[in-house]
Image 1 (cartoon, one colour):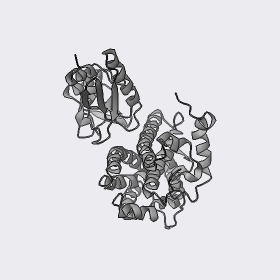
Image 2 (cartoon, chains in turn green, brown):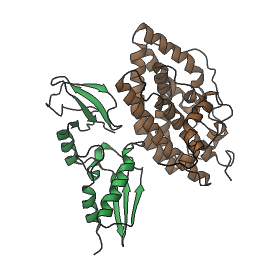
Image 3 (spheres, chains in turn red, blue):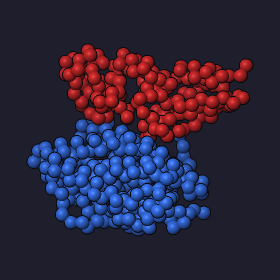
Image 4 (spheres, chains in turn brown, green):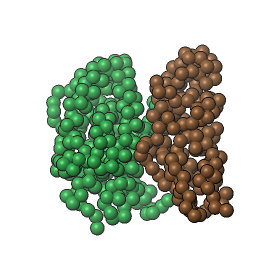
Amino acid sequence: MPVTEAQIWDWLEGVPDPEIPVISVVDLGVIRDVSVSGDAVTVTVTPTYSGCPAMAVISMDIETALATNGIVNLQIQTRIAPPWTTDWLSEKARTRLEEFGIAPPQPAGGPTRCPHCKSDRLEKISQFGSTPCKAQWRCQDCLEPFDYFKCI
Amino acid sequence: MTVSAAESPLFEFLLRQGDNALVLGHRTSEWCGVAPVLEEDIALANMALDLIGQTQLWLGYAGEVEGAGRTADDLAFLREVYDYRNLLMLEVPNGDFGRTQMRQFLFDAFQVPWLTRLQDSKNTRVAEIAAKCLKEALYHLDRSSHTVIALGDGTEESNRRMTDALTFLWPYSGEVFKDDATDNAMAEAGVAPLPSDLHSVWLETVERVLTEACLTLPEGAFAQSGGRTGFRHTEHLGHMLAVMQTLQRSYPGATW
């Protein structure tokens, strides 16, 4: 039976972001297109940050996940325009990020509340955190530092 | 057979963009593990990563335009000093942390308006790469201006060091605005604005931030040049490339 595009999307849902495993690469918004032609599958991926080392891992993980499901004729294309934006994070991803202890991106440019105690008394520690996409903040009530997913 | 600058001003233009990002990215990465505090160490490593990512976009496209089969990696690791087209300001040694931040700021203050204009390039690929890089340049500028202000308006020592940094870097800062044949060709083709068009907006940003940082804009309009044309690099670029390229030079074609 030929594979459908919906089926591919479904399998991609099962590929976690290598740095933030609670969200999938689909939730992250980096999968821009999936097309199937006969047994050939093309997945179009957009980089989050131009130098993010996780992108190579993401491509490899996509390849592995699809190979496990019998897709061998796979092409992964990179597309840089329009550039990736945090607006493409799914609602589910935003909820999961907060549950995981990472404040989701906000248009205002900073977190609205502490992902741990929900206080809004916050301070920025550094514009960069454990990965290029995150900044470090601290809650002034529970005093816990936390990652904030930067808005770009 | 490679195309010369005269044959392809677009290739030359792309090398300038890519080499700026590459050389500054490599210099910034030299702070990895030795920055004054952990947060700055992480920040500098992340900025370097952004710049190396941008390099891949620019030099990747440069390789395609050249049409000689060279990849971004080939261009980065297998060219000689005089093939490089980066600004001199970006290749000089980092100096102290303050000078590194001042250099980043002087560069970012140009990159933001420059990439903003390049987004409207008639060359679609240039416009796309610029749009991607601009997102990163914006927070680089945000960060470098804050750091310059914090250090300039800090202690007596930090102010003195930032003054020294500015004095050292200032003669290099004007190089980017010296239009040449490549710039004219790019402007005529609608690929890019003339860099000199951006001088006033750059100066406005620089003056505003330096004033807030309690630093004085240096006198004098003398500008070192030779980096972006490849005519004359400083002695430092060769040393930098020796470190950066050693692996590919010693083990040609090595991958991992």
